[in-house]
Length: 422
Ligand SMILES: Cc1ncc(COP(=O)(O)O)c(C=O)c1O
Image: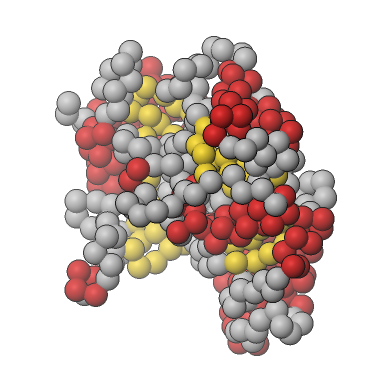
């Protein structure tokens, strides 16, 4: 049925396709009832655990009361949820726009920045993923996602601040400033000198869990603001406590953006996304009508509010920090044992393991990565793959993962690395 009636460009993840029919907490089950530890959370989306009872109850109660209305009427859910979300934001970030996906959120953020600044040019980063809509395809900087059609008007891609593969490495304490200087160069050489926005994920997700050197965003934001631009943080993967030390990924770089976009973990799987900005910037969108049929849907807002409550009540940010440390420590031990592991990086439960054929050349070990990935599935663990060359293992489980799950994950990966045939 899938082959006959679904988009032929979708792909499945394993040689033998996996059918998932049920989920509970950090586990999913196939149609034969086999349990897997979900180390990828439905692509970093199931933040508080599959079918969390509090989230399910909130969704069910709202489904029985009113499934849909729009912002042309009042409804308490959208306002209560916006108020709850605003309490999580620093500075003057208190106006929320609700949409349905991360791509839509980023499209809206760029529109907002262009309307507010009356500038057009946008700086994004190489190795970024911001979505696949016509607009966000231009922001995304991986050839694999870019169709050969006109896009990217006014978008310029700065150097990815990647301390593993980029020109300035982990031992360079000035790397943040050096990478950010490329943003300034780009503004000077590729734009009229004035820009609408700079957009960056707080840790690059699809690009392979790239953690920027300290000070990078602070320096980059300063260059952009000096050129009249707004700074947009894409928190689609890094938000809602996943990085462990902070609720938002941008806080790990000590900056406050002008616009924040969020999706995925915000709704634990419900089609919910948001853009949060300041009252002054929000005014720019009042020059025309702005409307979104499903944005702020009462069921999604009930779910979003329940997700925030679960993160708080169950201390899931602290758990991300604790289990993230356990995983990073364990993976670094595996790095000492398996030469194929070139780099282990990440923050909290946003982790990447970069596999290389040779630690000096850093040649991506794409096929070997695929082997590890398949063996892990055979042993009951689902993880993700990332990076332009598909050589980075992505470990981004639901934030309710336990210590014993983490031990299991490390054991499985150890066995999978031992089985790699080069
Ligand atoms: C950082 C980031 N931004 C935006 C998006 C696009 O989100 P969506 O697929 O909901 O449109 C993604 C999706 O993977 C993402 O990882």
